[in-house]
Image (cartoon, rainbow, N blue to C red; front, side, top):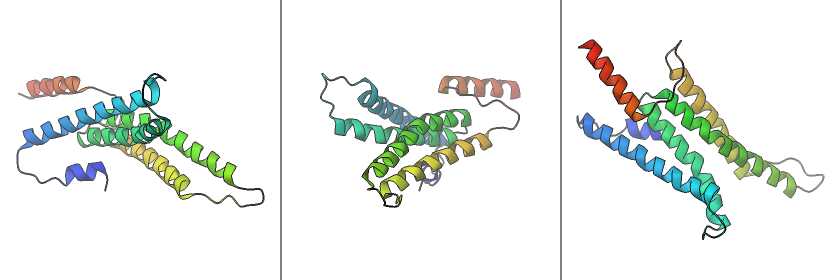
Length: 167
């Protein structure tokens, strides 16, 4: 079950403000975890205690976190931000798929068929799922409008302007 389904399946107790606060908190926590994982992958120096195993773990978690961030934006109907998050996950998924494919090819002896490992198939499935998420978010955007990424402050300002214009 995906993150979007988990968000939608939450019990509706009628407290929309609290639900939105929970979603905002989840987004903030995911953004923080992305920053931590990104630091382990890109900014950790030899002087730190980050091992190669920790770096590889962080590398596998970054696209998962980005997909969850995209799911939250999609739930909030901020499809431009969802597309952005999903697209940011794509290079990690593509590199993982290439790395597994390369490892499989190196492990095959000459004369053996190109049998795919479970890990390689998993990486390919995750890559295709991420492409599908990008397409789904793009299709959910309003027809004829540009796909734009906005932050929460801009979203709140736009909603206030729309409420002011309607009232």
